[in-house]
Length: 381
Image 1: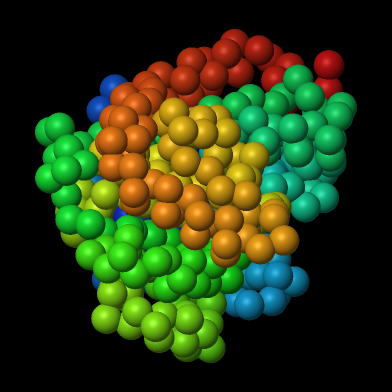
Image 2: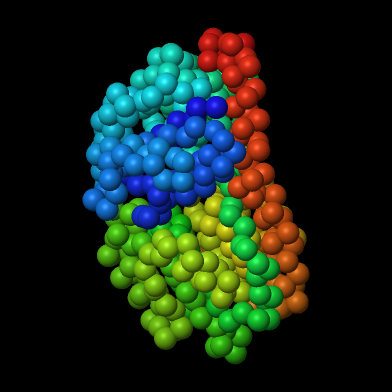
């Protein structure tokens, strides 16, 4: 098959500036290419990458893009400019994968390939305009339900296929072999609930938490999706009571260095508050793959792979005092190391279901189904 993957305007590929979508589809593209498919990736240009090159059998085309703005309306304008540029460079393909807002609207026919929309975030009104697409692919059942609610006539086009999660080369160390570290990896932004984590950790009883460290990894810069200097200052203020035991590492995008963070921590906490923003939760799944116990908020998207007290832990972020709810759950997990070890092991086993090879199988099967259905990009059935 000829498969073109079009990334958004704000992150480059290879994913040296992060981005869950970029990370996932870069991994999948490599898997497709290894199986003999012809892959083209179109992404944002940055100075350290040439505009066109071939890496490991994948042809890369890079276009002028943008830093992500704070204004959602301006973001959509920039996405439109980038999507017009991408449309003009499209090679003829069998399948065109994209997560951009405008491109599925701009591509009015399947003449260059069947349009396969990766719905990376909860829809915001655009699904009803995607009638020319062959597939609306959701990474979680929660997002699939949101798509159907917004565009019920396109129900037959919706398919749930999760993000892939790279598996470690060797068995991760056991919980008891790890440092007493609680880890967060992600954008340092209010919607990720990092302030809840800092407050909950600072308020843990000293006799329980005195030997533990909270390690926070991720960008605060607004251009990389962070909450900016003011939010970082707020977090540092919350950390004052235990300032020597909360470490802000900044962004880590290099895979080996990030892997070391996952393999060193006993517990990974992802307290996201993004009710209509969190579509899957790749970071918790990556932590599970590295044998780290995982504690998440009660967002619906996490339920596809996290069962409370089985493959992970869950706290109620919708309670009147979510920081207290998180603190109580942290206290329970820290005290009961046997429970933490059991749940971490179950999470590690569950993560194997999301290996790039298994997820690639699902995508390639779906691509083949669409190519054998002449009306897949036509009018709704």
